[in-house]
Image 1 (tube, rainbow, N blue to C red):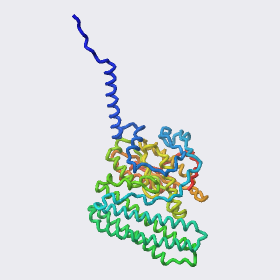
Image 2 (tube, helix red, strand yellow):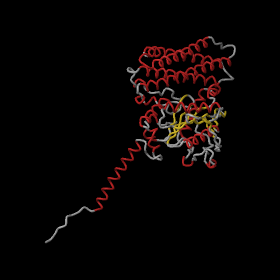
Image 3 (spheres, rainbow, N blue to C red):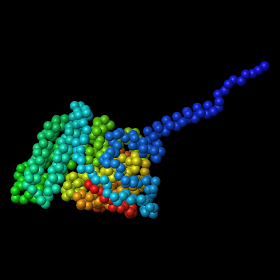
Image 4 (cartoon, one colour):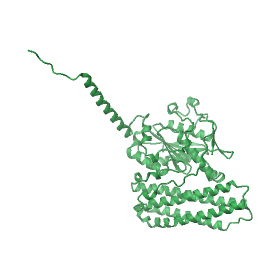
Length: 457
């Protein structure tokens, strides 16, 4: 009797099928882990860059790559006083940076505010429209200031009269553009509910700005151009300086109010992405920064990823604006933003925190390693020479550092960061301090051997 054998699948096919199923499980599991913030430190920063909305990614001037090597974190030692400090390559190039293009800076690239529920939430959109009017006025004042500085020492009557008329026209235009907006904003303050006091503060700031503009108009109408043209030149620039101070205060208050209202109404994630960018530095602005952090916190990323935060503040920036001019100061801000953005690690987040302040969130680094990276940068900034019409301008920064803890909120981080910066600034220019919320200490960095860097404005 013959027994026929039953055909069996080759064992190799079973093995292959098992391998394919296992591979799919691993890939899907890994992708999910990275999405939730549990990926390995080496690849997580790349995921961060890809996960951030396009409007929030760092966008630098399109002038091609600058051959400036970035710090390799694998070479960074964790102790600031380590003997290996001397071996770190900090030669960031002694060649001049690419020149700042003399194209018009687009101050008006602030997005279409009409698309963000204008009729439904007029309080927020009126704040944005008031900001647009303020930005336009600032751009015109910058042009007038530049013209006056170019003829300083050889001021002619035609330039002074022209600048005088332009400044008067700018003041009148600003008052005209903001009058209706301010009235509508005042009518809707009651809609803020528990935040009504905040709306009243914004209204007061708006009135202070309008009062300063009206004061400037009165002063301009009483100016004497005949007896001393140079004195008239200086007087016009003094009025522009006063307007700038009021404008900066209004900008900061309105931006903070916008964020507070959006948070209160749980609408920060619905803010139009085109409002996230700072047009001067091409970095995310304060709104973009807070929107990004709100997203990360909702994902629990601060609990699964190591983060350290730095606040970088340009020392003596007000005198720089006053004595070198608004345009020159803006160019320095733009170039410094470019340098910081190109010299942080992949996955780090850089934003313009306020006027002359930048915030850096270092990802997947311990506090000492993060501080060391930024201390190398702070020393190099002190070695920069910004060349403006043959004149070399030097700057320095004060830095405040803090680590992000699991129970932190963005507000707690901002406060610690600002506290550390305050201690650094109290000790003079070019200092840094770090805090854990209980103790604040100055950072005593060794010399990193930074070389002079020339940057054409």
